[in-house]
Amino acid sequence: QVQLVESGGGLVQAGGSLRLSCAASGIIVGRNFMGWYRQAPGEQRERVAVITSSGNTNYADSVKGRFTISRDNAKNALYLQMNNLESEDTAVYYCYLLNSINAHWGQGTQVTVSS
Image (cartoon, rainbow, N blue to C red; front, side, top):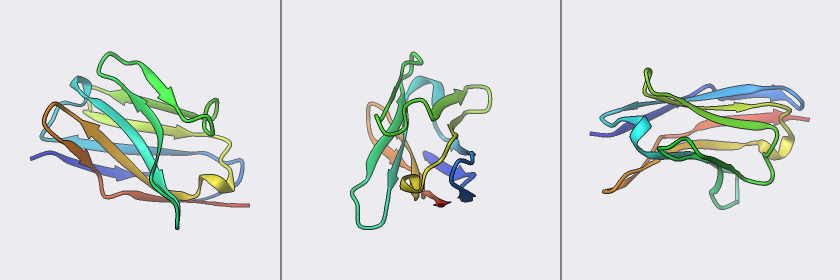
C-alpha cells in the first residue's frame, strides 16, 4: 500500500524559509513522477514543482528561483526547499506521486507565511 506522509510545514515570517519533506512507503520514489501541489483557502489546488524519474524538474512561475524540489532515493523521500517565502505562499502543501497505475496524495501540511 502506497503511503505519502508530509512534514515540515509551519508558521514563518515573510522572507523566511521552510523545508517540506515527504516520506514514501510501499513504492520507490526514484522510479516515479512526483511533485508538490498546494491549495489555498477558496482556491483550486495548483502544481508547485515536479520531478521526473530521470530527475528533470519543473516549477510554477510563481516559485521559480525561490523553491527547489529534490529527492533522496536512499531515504525514499521527496523534499521542497522554500526560500524567500511570501504571504501568497500560504496554503496546504501536498506531496503527489504518479505511477503507471494510480495517482497518490499525502494528507498535506500547512504552510502559513505572515507578512
